[in-house]
Amino acid sequence: MAFGDYPAEYNPKVHGPYDPARYYGKPDTAFGQVKLGDLGKWLMRRNKSPFAVAGAMSRGFWRWQHKYVQPKRTGMAPLMQIAFGFMAVFYVLNYKRMSTLDFIKSLFF
Image 1 (cartoon, one colour):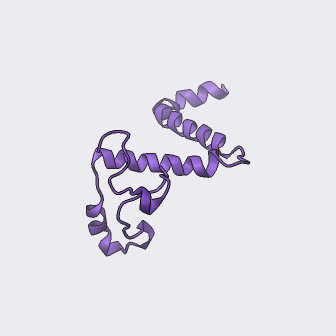
Image 2 (tube, rainbow, N blue to C red; image 1 turned 90 degrees about the horizontal axis):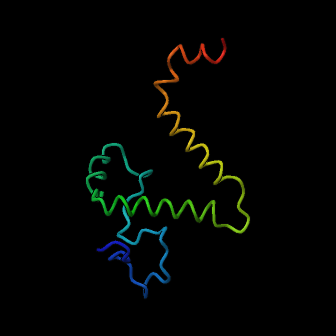
Image 3 (cartoon, helix red, strand yellow; image 1 turned 30 degrees about the horizontal axis):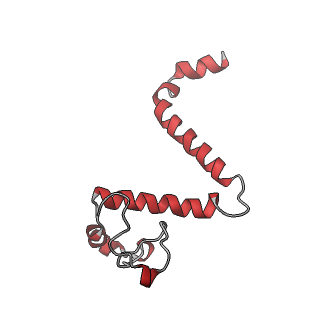
């Protein structure tokens, strides 16, 4: 499979128009339905190749796009989600500097 190609499992005669948010492979047990004893076997069945990880991230992005960004009447949700995501990233990046007592003293004194 090359970059930008359709998945090998996709068949236009069977699946119809291509949807980038859909997984066309063989369906497996949903994560919420996996019993704790079977979790190891379930994780071993996952494809952990870079192409598979990139495909999963792409499907997640397109599902988010279809749900929050592309509806006819979208609201503030996608903008707020992006803003909170940036806040979380910058908090983690600056945690060590902000956690010192000197930083807190400089804010109030």
